[in-house]
Image (tube, rainbow, N blue to C red; front, side, top):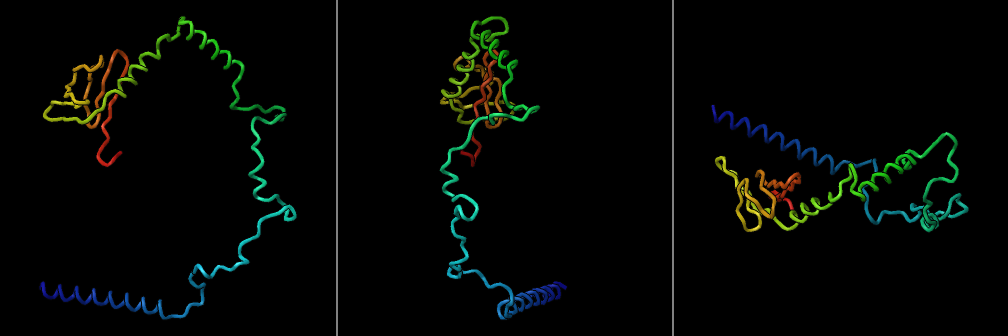
Length: 186
């Protein structure tokens, strides 16, 4: 029975091959009434439109790009319309009040808020995650040349947790995540 199946397969494949060869021959030998295939030397010189001029009803293309762009809102917006992206006086005043509070360190101000951000950014740029290991409930992170476990400290930041390709450090309310590029990423 396996010989019969193999012979049937050969017949089917032979018929498919014959049909493909017949289709190829018909395609190549049959004259075409449609468009001819494109060639680089078949470009007609008159097919390219000449550059526009003022007599054609428009300025030359170069003149469009030489004119500086108009910037700013139109001089007289139609009545009843306003610029939806313009800063209103109420928003401007609220921002100025917030800036005053921030500079004075008053209530609601965050004097010294830039310091933790700078600390976190300095930590992120000073250290490089070189590898992570997660095995049998134990996790380790290789940061620079030190092997760290969760709970270990580095420059005042405590290693909170280790994940695949990531190590999360915390200090007070600051969080820094060192990321190891995955294979194939740069």
